[in-house]
Length: 327
Image 1 (cartoon, one colour):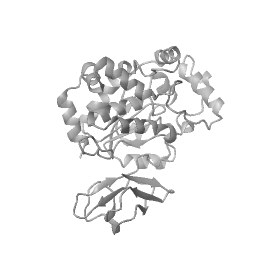
Image 2: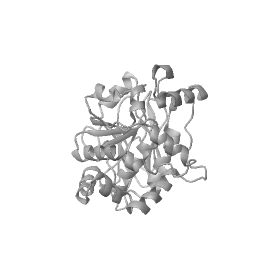
Image 3: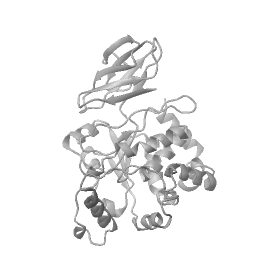
Image 4: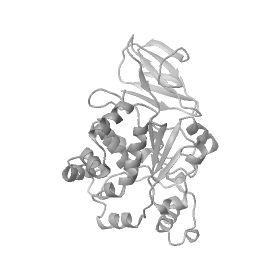
């Protein structure tokens, strides 16, 4: 019901679905206080223009009468050279609470970030970077975000070869089956760092859509976001990705034996540096994530059953995560 649509590097529009009189404030954080700037008071407009520099993370607080203000921010961060870097916040849960902004971020790979991007991200208070990628991907494009921000870096060593074999054997159907086994260490690390509440957590793979999409779906399920919203959020990756900045131009000869190097080089040659993201649907027209949910429901009794049985999380962990990430 509340969202921000960016117009250019300096301005945006706050869009809402209702016409109730509301006051709009610009804030550097999610708390309404004396330091915030009033944009407009008691407006019934559904579109409110706001000065929103892309160089810093700002929030818009929307207050109706004496009610507690609603917080709205850009889901996709306006990075110069980022791909699919977005905030998990803002969604309403089935029990009426809201996912806090600024607690967790998801992204594609980040080898092309500019100095301005690093300055923007440093201000987010990042405490941990969880790299979901394989050894081969990390060899080609190592993470630098932890170096530039002082964040803790977490990864797990595995090869892409089994994933490629799985993808090839299924003809594009049920492509995520088995991913939940592969990602157990990374899933455990992501949830533990969120529970530690030691700064914001950034987790990412290469495209920020498949492995990252699975981890995000598990977080939202625990928080109580409905599945229709989770599925819609998952498919935002198609429009939010910028494949040209997810991997640097490479020569496979520089990475002998690296199965990803040949794949990436071929993809770059085919797209001419301007390749577009493919929609996340199977050859039969089903959403990959919808298929995966059906698999988790059948095998583990649902995502929370998987997180208990494989990742080692408990009901107490789920309650603690909701307490930290919901408002």
